[in-house]
Length: 183
Image 1 (cartoon, rainbow, N blue to C red):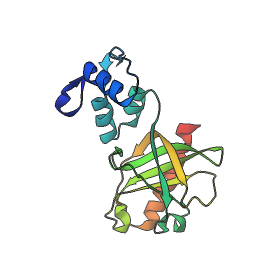
Image 2 (image 1 turned 90 degrees about the horizontal axis):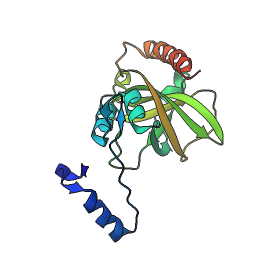
Image 3 (image 1 turned 120 degrees about the horizontal axis):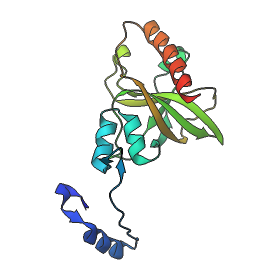
């Protein structure tokens, strides 16, 4: 196994780091799924392509994002789809490809499902990339709270709609499709 910049490091380097920084290292053989050797590079590429199904299979668990809920513009609420705007603190956290995803979380001890948009909100002339989560059947003030979500499925690409009403209608369809996937 090789890792690090230009794949210059090996298991012996990792063992040395472990001794220096007091952590244990256990070498395992290469893992294969459907005769494909799993690697962090393949997982990253799947996430960058929005292929959550493949990334989750390679990881062995759903890809997760966590962050603090920040106040947004309030557009989701006017569309009857209030959202929690997630601010990711980790500078280098890989955020999947822009699009609409099915997610789950645990909020106030309750398992909650929902859908998430990653993107720039092109229908309302957005330009800054954001992560907005709409939770199904959950109402509580989450501002300032830490939230961790698991990404289960990708529904579609983010796209620009001709009107806010067309966006609302698509969100209703997205919700139906999301609920069908998690039921």
